[in-house]
Amino acid sequence: MPNVVKLGRVATAAALALGITANANAANVFVWSDGIINEASFLINDFDVTSLTPLTVTLTDNNFLAPFDTLALAITPTGSPPGSTLQQLTSPSSLTFTPTQTGNYTAILFGDPGAVNGNTFSSFGVTVAAVPEAETWAMMLVGMGLVGWQLRRKVKASAASRFV
Image (cartoon, rainbow, N blue to C red):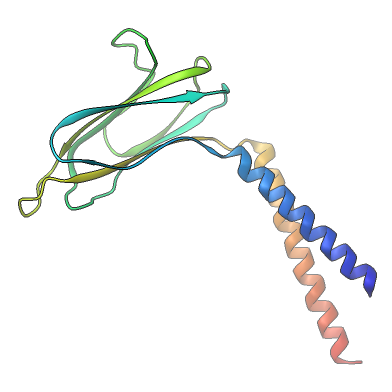
């Protein structure tokens, strides 16, 4: 019986380690959350990209007090000439893009808040995150399988001890 407990602890530790590794690969590159706009304006924010792996860009309208009439996002390499937009979202949604180079990028957001009951404050969120690769999904599935195996072993062990 002690060997089963030791094996269970090893399986649990392995599953947690695999899960932590999988989550580390999907870390956010850039988060611009809960920005509030009260009049039509452009907002600019810079972020760094350290790898040429695909990134998911998500633009959200948080519908805080009033939804946006217009909400758009453009991403360009910092210092590039006007009109060299790599990716553009013209409404709240997501897209995947692969950076052309590592380094500094600029997110340019245009927002025109709507009005509800005379209120013209609207809130947005922008997230740029790494797209999980196939081996990340595989490690996560193996980790979940090990956790499931451990739980099943515990159920069998407790059922067997009831009849003793």
